[in-house]
Length: 106
Ligand code: FES
Image 1: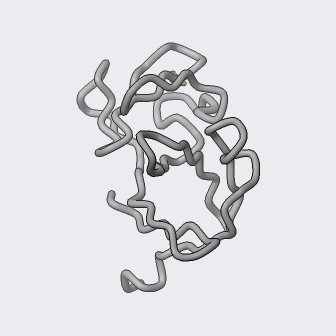
Image 2: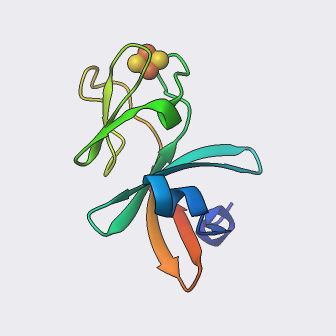
């Protein structure tokens, strides 16, 4: 699969504009998108530790905290700060007119 195949385009979800967080289900992927410092960041919805719902996670700065065991993930690289061998897939997010363009980084 080439990089172009992995790019996801979706209309900007209205809940993202209102609450600053939205969950997306696109094909076989569930993704959490958050607004942060005037831009957007995205991470796979299901925690790579034991499938906690990061869509219910606590956002702070460039991090999100899983609601199940409290592991913290960087939204920039997906790195888990609690266990260095765990990493979540994150996405670069750009806005193109009324759409979000997500590109997997990991
Ligand atoms: S399921 Fe997310 S930290 Fe355990």
